[in-house]
Each structure stands twice: as C-alpha cells, then as structure tokens.
Image (cartoon, rainbow, N blue to C red; front, side):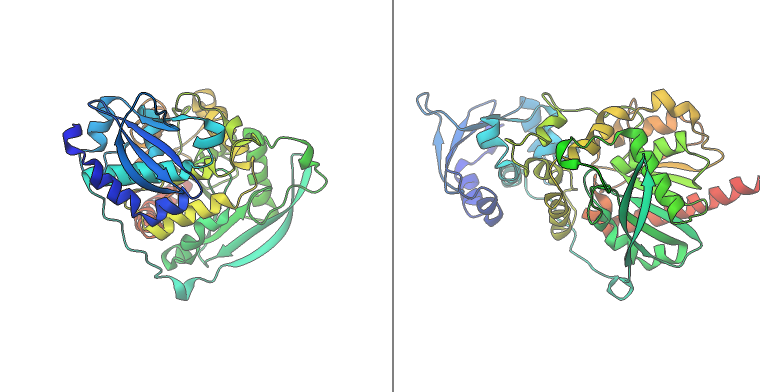
Length: 431
C-alpha cells in the first residue's frame, strides 16, 4: 500500500497548499504518518511543510496520524472518497486519530490537521471534483429580518427571525447545533420554496442575533437547554408568530427536534421533516465528550474545525467554508449544549411510540455522506423501520450541512420531497 505513496509528491503538495499554510500558521514541528508498511515525518516550519524524512527513534513527533491498515487502503482507493473516509472528522469513527498534546497542539491547529489529511489523501488518490459555486437566486434574495419577544421555560427572549415567501404553508426552519438561520439563506431565496411556503428561519436564544434570555445570568452557568427546553422554545416561537399548523424542518439538532416534536407535540404542527436526524443515539469516536467544547483551555476553533469535516466532499468550496464561518462566529459552549441533546438526549426508543406518522407526515432526509444514512439500528433508516408511516430518503452526494454547504443541490433534492409531504398532508387531512 505504501508503494503508492510518494513522500516527495506529498511534500510538494503540502508545501504549496495556501489553505494548509494559513490553517497551520505559527506551528512548527514534526508530524508523523504512521502507515502500516512504513512511517514518515513531515517537518513543518511556520505552517509550511519543509521536509519529508524517515522516522528516527531519537526524534519525537509532535503529532502522529494513525489508523488501521484497512482505513488507509480504503481512504486512498479513489478520488471520490468512500463514505466515512472523506475527511478527518468522518474518519474518527473508523479509527483515524491524531495523537499528541491535545490542548497545546492538536486542538489549536485542528483545522490544519484536517486540511493535511485532505492534502495527503488527495495527493495519493486524486481529488473529488467540487461543484461550482452558484448564486442563482439573487433577484429573489429578499428575506426580511425581524425581532419578536417570546416566552418559554419561565424566560423571555428577544428572538430574531428572517422570513420570506408567499406560499400558503408556514414552514419553520431550525439550524444545526450552535448555529443559526444564516444556514438557510439560500433556501429562503429559492423561488420554488417561496411559492410553496412562507418560511421562518429563526435563531434560538443564545444563537445568531438572538441574545440570551432576558434576566438570565448566563455568565454564571453552563448552557444546557435539554430536549424539553428546546421543544418549548420552538412551540413558543410558533405560537408567538401565530402560525397555524406550520411544517417544521430542521437539520442535525433540528432533525432530532423534528422527530421529538412529532412525538411530544404532534398536535401543533402539520408535518415534520428531519434532516440528518437519528432514531437512537449516534455513534461517537473514542474519548468523545461535549465538555471538550466548553473547556476554556481547549481552543474554541476545535469544534468548528471538526464540523467543517462534516461538509460534503463535492460541495462548492465557498459554501463549505461559509458553514465553517458560521460556526466560528458562535459563542463558546453553545454548540456543546445543543450537542448534549443531539448526542445523548434524543432517543425514539423512549418516545417514538407516540408518533402518528399516518396523521401527520414524518420524513427523515439524510445526506449520503452523513453517518445517519446507513445505520439501520439508530440512524435514518431505523426511523422508517420502527415508526409506522414514517419515510426515509437518502439524498445522493449531500452531507451533514446540506442546506448550507450545498444549497443548490439541497434545494433540488428537497423540493420534490416537500411536494410529496404536502400531498400526503392534504390526503391525511381529508381522510
């Protein structure tokens, strides 16, 4: 396998990669690739790989990339990466790791290690062709932003939301963990969506342009919203906006919320569209803890760097980096609090029996590159398997952040699905 690896070619690619130099800026040290048939080191000087060397016992590496032999052979097998090998983040649950001083070296430069993995993989196997950036909805990019005071969980918050469209069906849009309504800016501008829906992309308290709830001493406590707390905010937003039987569509944390709303507040909404939602708990890499995303000594950039790795490999490059930008602009610890719910507090084995997917449409739509797509026990397919009437759809080529990192591909995929949801909701209402 290592016969395919030309160290000098890797050095040349890594040494000339502007993105890598930017993401590894100020780092100097020795990076080791522990491959099954032979290891080698890259010596980095101020962010730029300068030399490729054999491993010497008396020269310790600052960080070491390692993985089982099967991982490397699969990761290097094709330019279009197999699902689960497309990024450092995806590889974590398949045995890939970077070993080193986590607080001092690994976490601060995680975006750099992620990029270095990409450079090495693509130098050996070739690079997937990314879709070109498109912005076809400039003339209909007319969302209007407003604030409204919302009360839930014994608190009041000034909630920001953007609305667009003139369709007869209200549609609430929930972002991913720690993020905000900017993730839906392209969907809000899509004339196909505007014709069908009046859309509301809101920022939960603590997110985006919505500040913490009024009177909460948030600087004295850890943000832990919990499943019921998030449900209550969503219902209160729908109530405050006066929405009659709105559809709810959310991604990631929003995908979990769609399913829990179907279970706990099925009476309040007209349909539930879960994007990259799970039936049970998602698999996590060894050593995972949400506390690493709220610990002051760990770089705030660590979580956004991991999330960037969950963008789709063929997604337009500017959109993928926009997803990262949104995460970098979030307040520390908010992602961790939302992710507590996503990873540990959502489980339809506990409340899925409450869902009546015959009365109200329940759809789970997962991207091909999202791990929920192929997990028949806890992922999207399990929702269809265990919830009578629910439907699962896998969207080819899309990833975890599809509304943001591949908005045109997402729109092309989701509009026909939503037409099916509309028809099914109308049929259920007439029966």
